[in-house]
Image (cartoon, rainbow, N blue to C red; front, side, top):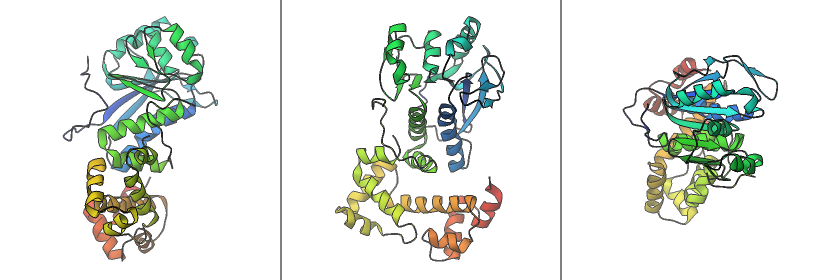
Length: 331
């Protein structure tokens, strides 16, 4: 059995392998639930420029899973008793009982013992509960099914939250809460700055906590936790091409430079100047990869006085020139 050290703890800096995730995908699942689970991990790898996560998709019988939109998703294999890894996440939607019989449930129970953590997305929570893997745990599922789920599984502490993390078990109510959950995982393991950048890739700017009732982490959550930091980051975003000094930002927020520096260090683990530079370099990186703008134009848009200054700072942070980075990392 794998160690039950929480996935939602800071990653060991010496770790030299990605977190291994297996997704058990059922037919009649939502494409949005699958994407909200998988794409934040993919984006984290891209932003970090190294594999923080690896993943594979399996299905109960190894056949492609046809989603509710009609798109078939190929599988790398079927659910087997000897699967193992760091996290096993079950993604399910309609008709989960029809798609998983007693034999598949037995295979799921056996495989679950070989993973550090178990996750359920939307109706995936039902499957975990049917296998007896949620007994004594707190969990959630889609809001439409909360009452039925609580009646069916009285040994589970059912919560109406967007997502729930209880020991080695984590569950989410649907597509958007799954995105919140994955950002939570990224933030806890690798820090707030990376989670903010991943959220920004998807232009995700909602404010949802785990225990918000169904109807994050992103900048909206940070705004609720410390609005002065959120306001400072908004100012930075608005002035990428003409960076403000730390003193100028502090004046606009009506706080001292020392207070601003302490707030950033406490919440993000770096000073405002370092975060501002990171923000500008990440903007430059996206322009390098996603556009064909010239180096001079990118330098100006991201607040560097010249192409040479941009190239020098970029090389210090990414160990190669902007033009070499574009050639080597184009997707």
